[in-house]
Length: 425
Image (cartoon, rainbow, N blue to C red; front, side, top):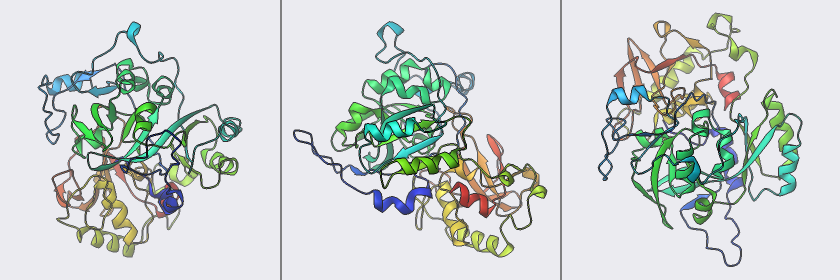
């Protein structure tokens, strides 16, 4: 799975392609910044605690770091599974008296993510902040940046203020935010484990090299890298072109439409926590209206499309037709049957009702929570094939293949409703 751009905004991507204007005496924009792009947030739940964990090898698939590090056993990981982040050796807790960032004081739940084709003016920010139901906004920098040969969705933040919009344990970890303020990059666990980006390694951006200081959850599935604004701007990331909006208790879908009216032309607004119609909240498939699910013909087309990609390589962030990651394979296969699926696993998780594994049918989706830095995060998806088998794109170094269904870290099974999938999309 990749924490990547949701397709909800993909069709407007070309409209948002531009090169940030270079001011006098400023460094030219590096080619590593491909474009400023809309970032789509997935529905994420993060349950984290503690401050810092130093790990040597979190998974069998993770590349070894050149620096020698203390090996940590499974019991260590289990006892610290609620850590705010997992850090490479050398990223150590900083005493409060030495903190470079302001202390954690409060949490602000993120609900919407705004991205504009240019710098957001103070007037635009004020209009959003003054909209009915909006409690707080945080202005950030956002773009796709080439790091280590990968196009990574990157956010440049003020560590002292942005921390309030992340899950509690991430927010309260001074060590994490000091690491980011000090010039490190924090990447998502899925980018590390599935994308092969090792803790403590160095990512070459062309203009500078960044040390991977930590795996950390920011509570936004599409964000795969977080750096300080100083670092972001040294990479050529556009300044103040995005913002996170906190609006608890407000219908996010309606608020999104209101914000689009006060934002600059070409701006996009995405739901971080998607608001679904009442049928999507039904707990049993029998309570859904007739015609809510895929037809037999649609299922046959989708499954035939998926199996036609057997043996194709897993590539983090790929969405076909020749290479795939886990959610990319799902989106591509369903698209062949005319079903408009969202791009990331956390969005795919809410495309229909959950069903017991014992009642799974071919074409249902199976999800897992494998991220030790964020036990609530949906990090992998596969297509149920029947008879205890599934079709999946597993991880870097593997290929699309059939596998036995396993239940370790199983989150659940979802029966896709095309109408709901299109809404989440």
